[in-house]
Structures are given as C-alpha cells and as structure tokens.
Length: 256
Image 1: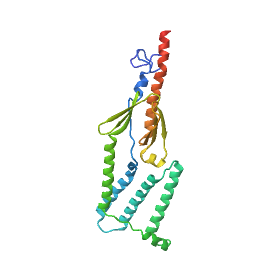
Image 2 (image 1 turned 180 degrees about the vertical axis):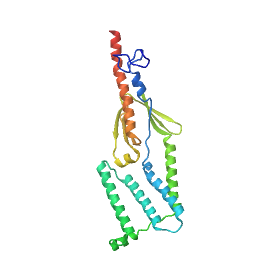
Image 3 (image 1 turned 90 degrees about the vertical axis):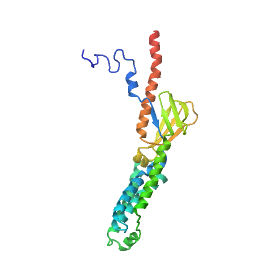
C-alpha cells in the first residue's frame, strides 16, 4: 500500500495507532486572546485624514486657497462622522445606509454651491461664508495627539487582556501581571453587534462570557475581529464538550 493513502473502509482521522480525537485536537486552537478596546480606536479615520491634510497644507503654502479650504472641509466632515459614531448606535445596516446617504447629499450640495455661484446665488453666498482653513501645524498636532493616545492604548492593553484555554479563563491585568482564574468548561458565550458602523470600521462587537462558577457575566466591549474570535471560541469549547461526552462511552466499552 502506498504511503499516505487511507486504507479502504477507514474514514480519515481514524487511522490505526491514532487516538480518536487527534484530528480535532490539531484543528482547535490551544489559546485565544481577547482584548477590550476603548472607543477612541474608532477615530483612526480622523487620524489618517489629519495626516493627509497636514501633508497637503505643508506643500500648499501659508496663503489659503480654494483647494486648501476643501481639504479643511473634508477634515471637518470626517471628524463630524467620528463624533456621530461616539454619539449614536446604528444597530441595522439600513440605518447606516441612510446616514451615509444623507451625509453624501449634504457634502454634494455643499461642494456644488461652493464651485458654482450661479445656482441659487443667495444660498451660494451662505455656503461661501463657511470658509474653514487651518495650517499644517494644526493638522499635524491633531494627528500627533491621536497618535499618542493610540500608543497609550496599545501599551495599556498589554496589561489588561483575557486568555481562554480549554480548561481555564484567565484575566491578566495590572503592571505586576495580576491573574484571575475562572473555569472554562461549560462557558457560555454571547456575541452582540450593536453598532454596524463600529463593525464596519474594525469588525468589532461585544462578547459576553458566562463562566459557570460566576454569578455575573463578563462583558468585553469593542473586541476586534469578533466573528473570527467567536468562531475560534466555539471550535475550542465545542471540541472540549465532544471529548467530555466521549469519555464515558470509551470506559463503558472497555468494561464490556
């Protein structure tokens, strides 16, 4: 028989000399890390636009022009959208689509009346009164401040995160690496995506962990790649349940 071929009548994963569940143990993750991030991470579009605007202003010169005013208006638009993310939740895709539709209409009308003064001159005059302008120092200052906050967040999460193993749920927190242990078997997991906007930005959502030994649930907000994390947790805990249920059967067969 050629090496590497499965003998007839024996399903893959049940080769002689290979213990049952070996394939399952290889597929399931051994440990999963869960990190809860603050909402400030959703302002990364403002950070990127601030860097872009700062570069444009650095090459545009000190005198304001039509192009520099449009760049400043673009920054203000992205900044306002980020504020909306903080202020409201968009639980459904339709609400997010409606928001983008209204925002596109407002920006389109603003640009049309700024470019052409012949369309409703009185309304164009009102729009022309809004003349935002900021220099490169301002935009780079915004980008630097946000960048410093993001760096502080990345450092902070190194000292506050959760680790899930097939046997335990571990909470690492504090500079001295304080550790809290919970029982991982029979762990119930709920996933919630309350804001489509936040999921769109960072694939984030809420994970609710219900350890069997704790009366209160553990709520982790803004977990990135939440669907992937949830699938990994389900795979790990599901494999653990299969192994626990299969053990009494094997003992019964041996006794027989």
